[in-house]
Image (tube, rainbow, N blue to C red; front, side, top):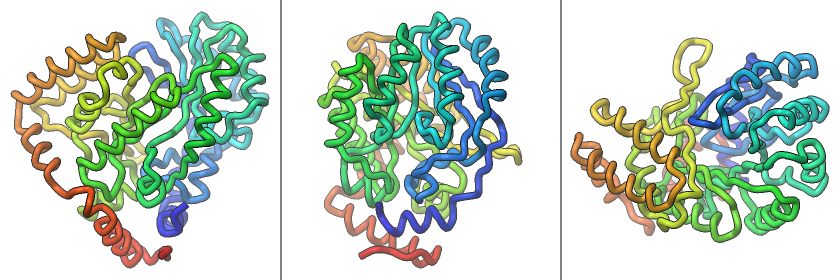
Length: 365
């Protein structure tokens, strides 16, 4: 990982967000999301990831899991799939004891919902855990969700500080398919230090790599500015801008139309976290008040529509409607013209130098 970004994260971020709730249950359409408390992501603690901070909490006990299960059952009514996550990797036994996960799996296996998704780091996928999951839930469609984020090595190291070995990930994809399981990969939109054009191109390239290498579906994650992250510091100092909804739209427009049925969306503004002080913990993509309702309508219709061609028609329909409502598209077009790929290395270097001086963190050469 990059020493400057690692040192910054360890010095300024860790320990600032303590989670006390045993679980959070959210819904998006027919998806039920259950986030479990945990000591936190091991990679977060090591200084990884400039864009996210889901905090740190405590290990769940089997008794607390038993209290949780009826809550899941009640919330699962009418749902098609359940996503089980934690503050980092739900398959990491240091975050969720295996006996607790066993109780959850056996409970889920008795529910009528067919698809069960587990959110975890790709390095935790191995033969042992695949065999274990299939044994616990033999009748379920098991999906593993991993954070791919970007396939650009420069973006991984110098912008996100999250290294993904694509060769190893490719082997994990094959392994999951061997066990009859599916994989979904998260693609990040809004890497710091990049221009709007570079951000979009990076995400499009990541989606294309994922589909071409056998990933079953891709979740497009637009940047949410979370408190006490590097994104937050850059934003408050005028060195990072909230991405616009138009950036999300542009990614969907640029990917091959026959990929559209494999793309899902997350954290586009439907979920907002609020801290103990009542202040929002995340700033989702931006638009003006005049078009915000129309954007939420677009996202809902896009996610409800499974067909490629129909999704493409929705892009055409809402592209015309949203462009006519306000000046958001004009602002987006102006942002697209700022900075070129040729300037990327020098631009990133200058902001990194500012970060090193401003926050007295050491940097590599």
